[in-house]
Length: 156
Image 1 (tube, rainbow, N blue to C red):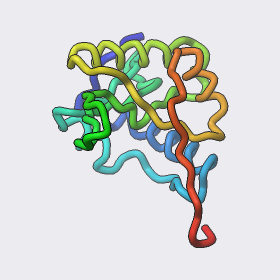
Image 2 (cartoon, rainbow, N blue to C red):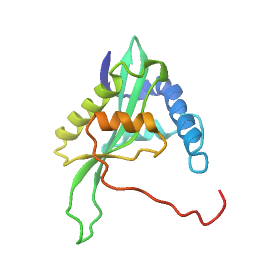
Image 3 (spheres, rainbow, N blue to C red):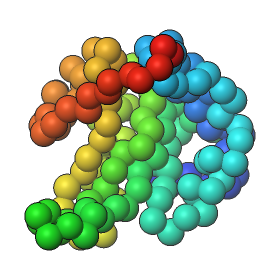
Image 4 (cartoon, helix red, strand yellow):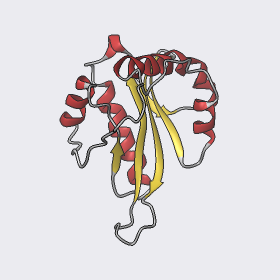
């Protein structure tokens, strides 16, 4: 198993897993998330962006998991302590390979990526009904520091 930065040559192998990621989120939150193909411009643009990367878990040429990470800054509000941080935008391990430590290896690589950029912390958004993901993030010592709440103004 190798954890490394994705290259444009990995996009074709990433597509099925990105498609699985989008379908998983759409299944959990169909009012807000869409199932779609993972083969659009998204992975290519993020791989080429200097403040963004895909970390991939590769075995025998197959991508078994990925983590999309961005370098971010807090908004310039006087009431906020300024921070440069990493945000995990998308994270998925192929369903048949979960529980093998691949996710933990990707999180470790995200920590290394963030430390190499002298960032202050790593942040992520997880759907509230993604219970398996919540248990994983608890195990990896991610703290819950807030909640996102929505009031729908129209029937979704």
